[in-house]
Amino acid sequence: MPGHTPQIRLIQVIESVWPEDKTVESIGIAVAGPLNPNEGLIQKSPNLPEFDEFRIVEYLEDHFNTTVLLGNDANLAALGEWKYGAGRGHQDLIYLTISTGIGSGVISGGKLLLGARGMAAELGHVTIIPDGPICSCGKSGHLEAFASGTAIAKWVQAEIEKGAKSIVAHDQQITAKGIAIAAKKGDALSVAAFKRAGDVLGIAIVNFLHIFNPTIIIFGGGVSKSIDLFLPYIKKAIDQHVFAQGYSEDLVLTTAALGDDAGLLGALALARHAY
Amino acid sequence: MPGHTPQIRLIQVIESVWPEDKTVESIGIAVAGPLNPNEGLIQKSPNLPEFDEFRIVEYLEDHFNTTVLLGNDANLAALGEWKYGAGRGHQDLIYLTISTGIGSGVISGGKLLLGARGMAAELGHVTIIPDGPICSCGKSGHLEAFASGTAIAKWVQAEIEKGAKSIVAHDQQITAKGIAIAAKKGDALSVAAFKRAGDVLGIAIVNFLHIFNPTIIIFGGGVSKSIDLFLPYIKKAIDQHVFAQGYSEDLVLTTAALGDDAGLLGALALARHAY
Image (tube, rainbow over all chains, first blue to last red):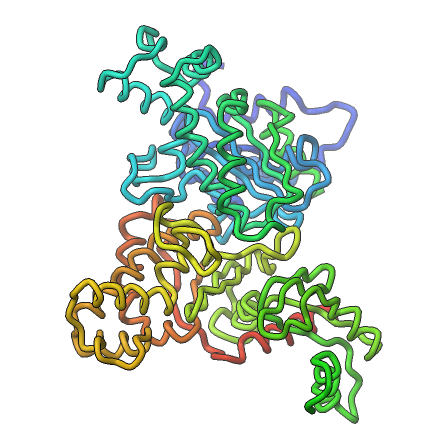
């Protein structure tokens, strides 16, 4: 559909899946990037700048004459895992997706945590070490700056430049995936890279336990496929740093069940809830 | 009422305020220390060990034949400030009480944050600097270990022992209150003590903004009476470390309105809500 604006293409995509024999009661939309779900407003859209400051809910409600609901993709992935995936039956849940960055969503008391402007649950952007490395957001020492796939690769790259030996040194591009493969082969620098990420994730997760007292933490995103490489350090941090046993004794630490569809299924849950 | 068990004294206190001409629909109870509000269970009662592992809700419901609700005192102080105090009209609120320790309560989306076992919102026990000083809870580097009244006094004491000069050096006991008085007179060490606490509180509060996206933060407890001594550092941390303007542009930073009655008024709110 070249030539059309992204707005029109969006309408065409929705029309292409519109059921002929059923009524549409509501539409749920998952969007990456900062948005205000209460106002139905996309604040910033890095990949499709035509959607910057775009009132998507109003636009689609006017066109389709049905209820439209908007959510941040990481929040909706948490909602999807809660309703249909690894988090079913839990009422207090934390979802962390570890890939290029670290996204997150929180279910607290059976409700998606949104905050006043829908900007809550940015767990990747909590400070772990105040004078630590610079995060993708520009601030220093955030969890994401230590434990995202990008951060893991960056650290390995820097260590190699300082003279450390590793079998990933000759990879065309050093990636978290390559480092995970090397770590599983026993490459010391790669093992150390996941230990460093795991130690920092552990500190952060203990904080999240004290803050939210959840019963489950779900890890999604590409890096979570290598959970065996960092989970031991998270468990050790929990053993060492949780200040009352009640926070950890029945805690489930697991991986996501829905893969890349989690956000879409969360949008479905959002739409169903409204309906 | 000497000779009576604390349980019987508690019943006598409630009977002493029982209204003669009105029906009691519910009773709300605020208790310091770890408890499970869902089970109506006091887990640990440091000051009255007879209440350790005591099912207070069941005990009082059996005796008075009315609904009884239980809450942690800091959580209920947050509820009190929200319903009747400085937080009226807000739906996303953080309450921090800074005194001997740091207690806290969170209202998120118009609901008290409790977590699975009612142990959530322990914001004083988040790690700020992993290898920092030991907290009252025994773990290292928590917010409380830097910014409580006890921590402020401890730091000044240690600096004086290392040779620092201060007008509080000859106080019979070095307290946060004495340090605040000295700081207002320009005592350099005392000013530095509040700067240190404020810097760390600032980092923590930025994290809480990213986690909860609240519209108001309320400071209670004895140390909050000296808010002018640390608020500038919190504001500076917010300016420097918040990663999107939406977290801070309409944020209210203020002191509690209800003083020592906040917890009791929160218990009233809890009881009313049930009714």
